[in-house]
Length: 175
Image 1 (cartoon, one colour):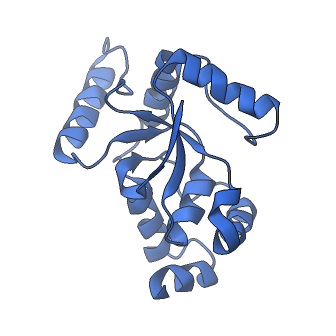
Image 2 (tube, one colour; image 1 turned 60 degrees about the vertical axis):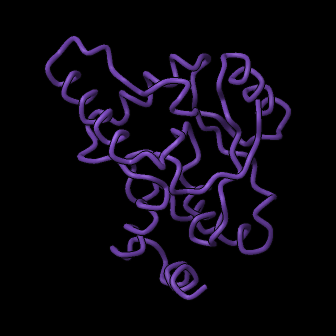
């Protein structure tokens, strides 16, 4: 498993809008203002490893798969799919940091990442046990999304719609 810094514009995020827990976002935001390296790595899967597609047996599944493939085709800068970590990635983006990401390419990478949770290096991991399971879980999550977006896009939308605290918006827009 490789760990590297990735631009938030290169990562497809979850459809959750805004983030579920503003209190967690506030904590991560304060941490990122001080030292963003304190936060554990965010798990991502390179799109070159696989796409989050459904089985394609129903019309809706085929429609979703087509929409997702079209989105990727027209957004070549996107290289990764976020597995978990919407609050962290939002806080990092609001404070103008890259995303400290753990690149999961193999099932062994997934297993190694899960072991980091067991020893406390990573706070949690909502993922499954294999790349294939994670991709299907993410497809199932995204299938009802009206559109797909990067971490940058979603963060900018939160700022524009003022669904996060004003001090975060001010920090993001003035730094």
